[in-house]
Each structure stands twice: as C-alpha cells, then as structure tokens.
Image (tube, rainbow, N blue to C red; front, top):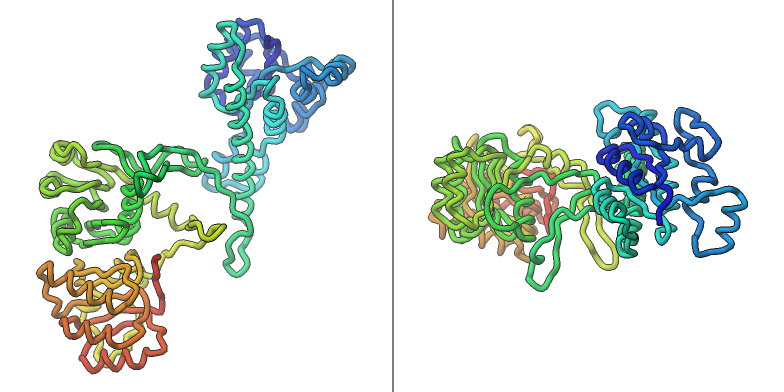
Length: 519
C-alpha cells in the first residue's frame, strides 16, 4: 500500500483535488515550494520537503529535492533486501508516488523579447531528476507527469485498489517521453541562438511528435497513418467544421493548397489534386477566382481540394456546391456559406490559419526519408516576391506590361508543381499545367494540350518553367501554340540556342536565376 507521495508541479491544474484524495487515503503528502503553498492555502495537510531532507530550500529554489533522502526513497527496490537495509540504516523512508511537471521552459521561450537569462532560469534540474528516479523504479513508484492522468490514479487509490502494472508501465514511458522532450526543447532553443556557419543546417536535429489524429489509413488502404504535431504545438492550425473524417491524402493536398494560397494578397483560389495544382487564379471576388481556377482543368478539379485566402461567402458557396469537392480550405466561412455547403454531407470544410502556417513553414526544415536515413533541407521560400527590377530580360523584345504580369503570376505557381513543371497562363489565371514528366518538352506539350482541351487561346500567354530548358525544342512548341512570353531560371549549356529560338519567334524571355525543382 502507498504511504507517502511527493508533489512538485509547475502546472497546478488538478493538484489540489489529487492531494486531497491522497490525504483521505491516509497517504502522507510531501510538497515543495509553490506547490506546498497552494496546497496549504487549500487546507491540505502537507509535509515540506525541507523537513524530509533536513536542508532548507536554497539558491532561490534551485536546491530543493537533490538529496539522498529523496532519491534514495525513490530508487530503492522494495524487493531488494540490501536496498531495504541501507534505507533503514540511513533513515530513508520510501516514497511511493511522485507527481512532477517541469518549469515552463517552452512557454518562457515563446514570450516576445525573452532573454537568455530568463530561459536559463526556467530550466528545471530537480524535477527531471525526480521523474527519472521514479520512472526507473516504476514497479515500486508511480510517476505522474501529466495532470490528465491524476483522475485514473486517484480513483484507484480512493477505492483502496493497487495500481495495475500495465498502468505503471504506461506512466513510466510517458515520464521518460516528458523529460526527453524537455531536454530536446532546451537543446533546440540554445542551438538556434548559435549563428550557423555558412548557413549550414544543425549537426543534430531532435524531433518530438505527439499524435494529434489517427487516420483511417495512409496513401493506400494497406498503409497505417496518423497525423502528428511537434510537442510544443498545442493544436493544429486548422479546424474542421463539417464533413467526414480527413484522410492522409486530404492533409497532403491541404498543405499543397496552403503553400500556394500564402503567395497572394488579392482574392485567390487554388485547386489541388494529388499534391499538384490543377487550377489557380485570382479575381475581384472568391467566386470569380474559383470559376477561373476551375476552368483550367474542370475534369481534374472534380474531387479536388480547394483553397481560398479569404472568407467564403454565400455566392462562392453556391458555385462550390454545384460539383463534387473533397475539401474546402479557407480562413473562414460566412454562416450563409456554411448553411449551403453543409448540405453536402461528405464535403469537409476546414478553417485554416494561413498566416501562422506561412510563418511556421518559413522557419522549419523539410524532412523526408531516403535510403537508411533522412534528408533535411530549408524550405524553398522562393523569389516570387522579388521586385520586378530583379528579373533579367534577355530577349531582343522586352515583355509588355501584360506579359510581365503574366510571367509574374505563372512563376508564383510553377514552383508548387511537381518537376518537370510547366505553367501556362495570364496575369490572373492558369491555362494549362504540365507536371511530373521525365522530359521537359513533354511537360510543355501536356500543358498546351490541357489548355486547348479547356478551350483557352494561348495567343499572348506566358509560360513558366521551374528549371532551365535543355534544348530549344521547348520554345518551338510554345511558339507554335501562340505563347509569346517565357520566364525561366536559365543556366543550361544550351542557353544561347534557347535564346536564339526565342528571338527567332519574336518572343520575350526573362531569367530568374533561381530554380524551383519540387520532387
């Protein structure tokens, strides 16, 4: 039976009721610092930790529980006669339960203007030591690091029952996860304060992820999948307000949508299918942007994920309800729009915090498995926000104002298309998209074919390419279709031949000097 418990918590949630349950069960409650004050104020009878150690809390609370009478009481194996004899010899009384959560380091470093000294003062030392001591001896000591676990333990204790081994084991694992995440957060913070040499990535990367949602399956039914958040993130940046459960593929397409939507300030719409845009447009309203985006490839848009950068109104909702759409992602929905769209029982409506997403993406690393390891890279923030003066006109004929605006728009979109990527369009709308082809000229042909199928005239249209043209045949195909302006990075050994073809066809071409492969 439990006889003594030690409570030392930064997060006081539920601790008073838990302590009262322990006292009613005849368990002596030992408490430290602020926890002791809160419990005393609530009328709970406690023993100060200094009464156990015979040593006062010193150095502004830095020294409280780092003492043999605490750690010996936690680490001693009750089934080891040698441990029991030594505990009796040194007057160490066992502690059977520990409830500890740590100084709020994560909250501290997220405060604007936090100093290094403030961060250092919020690094817990005694807490992790107690957690690890108790967890190491979990067969004899119950360790609690999450206030949400108090109720199940309190119920068992209150009913005079022993804690089952399975519960003790689960709490032990959770305790080590807690201290591991705490150390990861500290290391990551101070690592981030070091200036990187030559913009290099860190030598070590530590990730701690919490499951936020179990998904029905992965990309295919035979694959298991879940959605995880970094431990310091309390909740996702999106909220589902209607529709059936989100799938793995939905989440991937939502991410692709969000990347593009963040490119624009004017009303815009992005339609994504299989992680590629199949239509993108801006307009005076979301209704106009959506109808223009859908016109790029109406067949591919069927069953797609649609993203907006502004609140969906009833006019846009009425048009959206006319076809099958898997997911609509938006910063918000007017009540009238929700009423219209909720008639589609399976359609998912997602409120998405695009601003926070864009900020987080710009400061995070992209990670993917490869071989027996992982590849990490900084995000491709791109150059689509560069002022026009940074683009280099290399053709004999400079682009018109309309062509320049069209090149700007298509260049924003092309870096979100899987390579080899080609986007055709004007200043506010995509006409045709060629994605994922092994040969660039095939992507050009595909984009032209899709544009013609959708009924667009390509006369005067712009073409954006995510990487250089290896041969002038790409330009010849574009010219035959009526395309008059090209934007691309340049850098091919055949740049001269490509430029000669551009000039021969009387086209305008601008170089960005920045490639945007996306694999």
